[in-house]
Amino acid sequence: MHAPSASPRQLLQYVLDDDLDAALDAGLMDYAPQPGDAALDPRHPDLPQRLAQAQQRLRTAWAARARYRARAVRLARRAAEREARRAPPPAPDRKPALPPAAAAILARAQAKARQP
Image 1 (tube, rainbow, N blue to C red):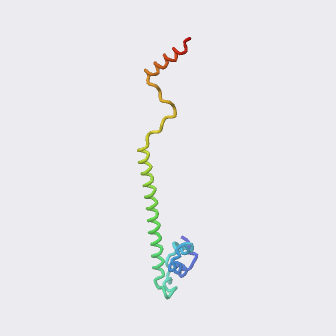
Image 2 (image 1 turned 90 degrees about the vertical axis):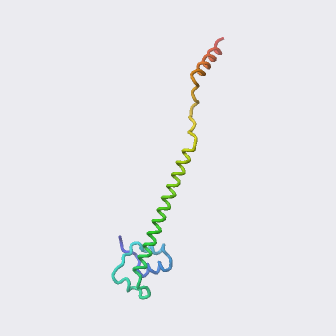
């Protein structure tokens, strides 16, 4: 974990402005409360708690997104499996072989046709 590139006050301002992209770019998820952070902004003595809450909300949202994506993949896989079970078997590339009796009749007919 590396130090955020913005001060805790700036991170809080991004969060308060609902500019989470900027907060993330500035290192919100790397923020770890330090002694004295609560005194950085007299208007927001709960600065460390607010940043921790923002981090937790983002983690929760990311986990939900991951579950949603995993579900979508699982549903697509099940649909593909279901469709594969419904589909007829692929047709062979070559002509089907004649039954032995039919092949014998055909051979006799071809032989007879070749005779002068």
